[in-house]
Length: 281
Image 1 (cartoon, one colour):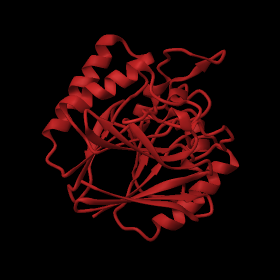
Image 2: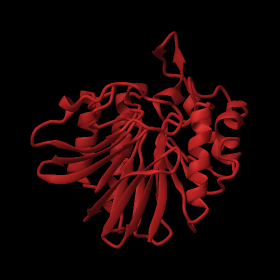
Image 3: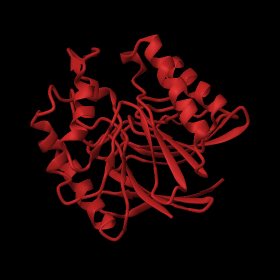
Image 4: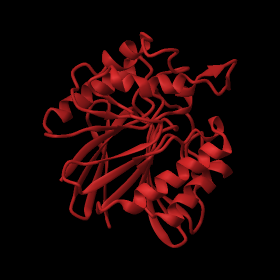
């Protein structure tokens, strides 16, 4: 059985991050052999400038000091850095890759990678979805490598995650055309069961179809920043995507996979269960 947790858009260093961390610790303490899938925006507002940046302590080690399990992180847009409110292609993000060598629980061996659950029932494929930070060659290389990894996987569950939304009723909304094509190209050659992301600071479950094949979308970007934007229900597309739930509360997700069945729980910052969703392959 796989029992893990999902957490996105967490690295604010604000009270909200600490509240979610404390709630998650209480849940994690009851689970053996677990881990956390980090869905990006690990360090607000502009990532880190070096591997010794004190923000690693302020916005990761200290908030999660009592949670001693692996955090399998991915890169968000804020992790690449901002300048005058415009994204610039800094190498800030790769300081987060290097930090893997310093931390006992921060796991990010490259800007995209894969790992398996201990029981080999699920394999996780971690993308760098910041395509605007990459050359066309880098985009195609990531796509080719991840397609091959997914194809070679023998695990029953294939779960992909990155930072940016594919479909969302939040402020960032549905995927930009370049990311839409990137994800569809991967799915067409190497279908997977679930795509998880952050980016929008809410929790959502969305059923989607690509070429008549089901894909479950999970958005969980509520790890550290409050969200007050309106829900844009019109972002759901007929015969393409259907919203199952949405919450703007702080919190995190819990995944339990047993055989061909998966249960997702969304919990708020007080550990109240907001929504449960069952899914099978």
